[in-house]
Image 1 (cartoon, rainbow, N blue to C red):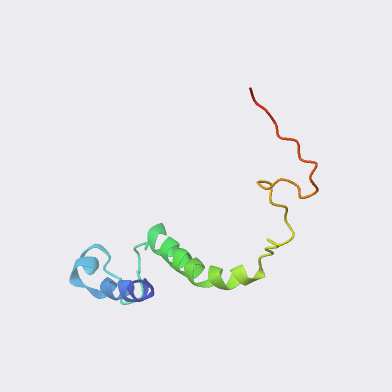
Image 2: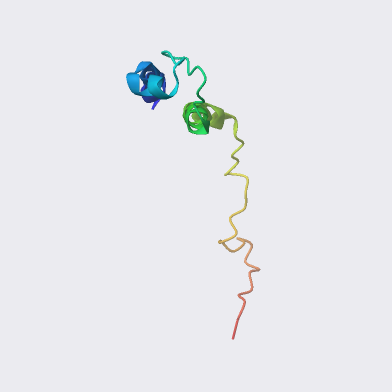
Length: 83
């Protein structure tokens, strides 16, 4: 994805793009607009790269949370009847 985002602006220097945007050059759109899809691609790719590094700062205390599926171990558990 990174390579595609880096190579995409190279196409601005083609004859097809210059037909519609005469001032376009490589890595310079000139009078034309790149659009939101390219910017969202950059943001999405950067989030996909950096969010795994941010996950190390999450607080997961799985040992301290009670397991609601298990009955208490003190023997005072009264089964509930739904009849």
